[in-house]
Amino acid sequence: AMSTVLLIDDEPDMAMLVRMCLKDVQVTSAANFAEAITAARKERPRAVLLDIALNGDEDGLALLPRLRAEAALAEVPIIGFSVHGSRRQEALEKGLQGFVAKPFKAAALREALRPYLD
Image (tube, rainbow, N blue to C red):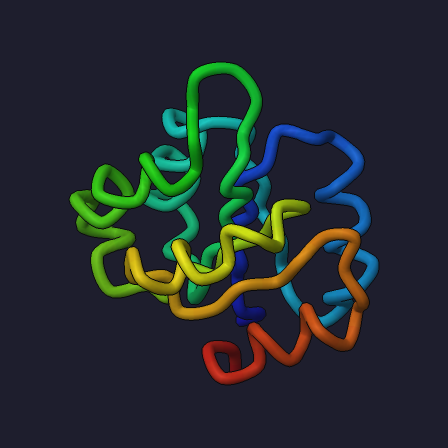
């Protein structure tokens, strides 16, 4: 079976861009915490791409403990994904396994995920 990556991002075009870059990977997208939990339980992702600046009230890094509290995501590597490159250090300190800045290069995205996929 193809590895699944869960993308938590509220920009509709982002899922399309990520899918184009990760052709051999199944990308499931979620726009918010509730959708992410539902998808994680169903898909059992191998890695998560987390937009750390979701619109509205949800800060991606604030979601981290809630994501980790979910059994399906407790051990899954979570990669930060953001236009806010200045938050890279904060993201890594809070326990993310990696960070990809937007706008992203396909090679950088694949490289960040490669260790966690088949």
